Amino acid sequence: MNITTQLKEVLADLPEGVRLVAVSKFHPASAIQEAYDAGQRIFGESREQELSVKQPALPQDIEWHFIGHLQTNKVKYIAPYIAMIHAVDTFRLLAEIDKQAAKAGRVIPCLLEIHIAQEDSKYGFTFDSCQKMLLEEPWRSLQHIRIAGVMGMATNTDDSAEVQKEFAALKQFFDELKERFFADDPNFREISMGMSHDYLLAVAEGSTLVRVGSKIFGERIY
Ligand SMILES: *Cc1c(COP(=O)(O)O)cnc(C)c1O
Image (cartoon, rainbow, N blue to C red; front, top):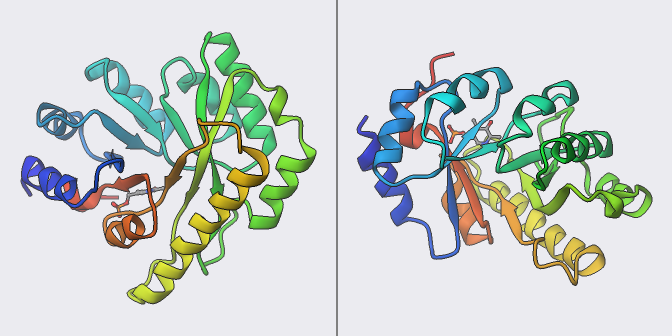
């Protein structure tokens, strides 16, 4: 697997305005450095402990995105530097990010994770629970977070019609939220969807951030 070649191949697939999060979880710092040397600056990790080891060891202008499920008690470790948190699925987590961002003197862009796949998952808002949170919770008073959009993962299936339908539903939900809650907020603009096996479908349905790991770095060893 040649990381530079793979990276360029993925980038060539992305229209202007769509950014790549290179998902480097379970891959060593040397692999990240290789992609960095080829020009990549945004990297995605899903475990706080792993990220906390990599972040100090790699170039400081890397934009680290936290893409996995984040426990509230881990927020404090990443708040000083994290560039975006993709999978916020409770108001409680949003409030904790706000608190830790305030301590770090920062404003952290966050995405609301929406459950769009057919598989069961304990993570992610439903369309209804997300609207309910935005209606009922005092998120507008949080000064140190910015709700920057939505994030979702499609069903892991070869049925591309199903995957396309799920991505289209997330785009439609983003448009609804934009109109209802964020009409005057230019920061609400990201739709994080698309992984190695489905990012082309995601881009066709309006993704602004794709999260691609194994296609760039090779299969992960668990
Ligand atoms: C691991 C992961 C990815 C990347 O998956 P690949 O199939 O390796 O591209 C994207 N998003 C999330 C949330 C992940 O956990």
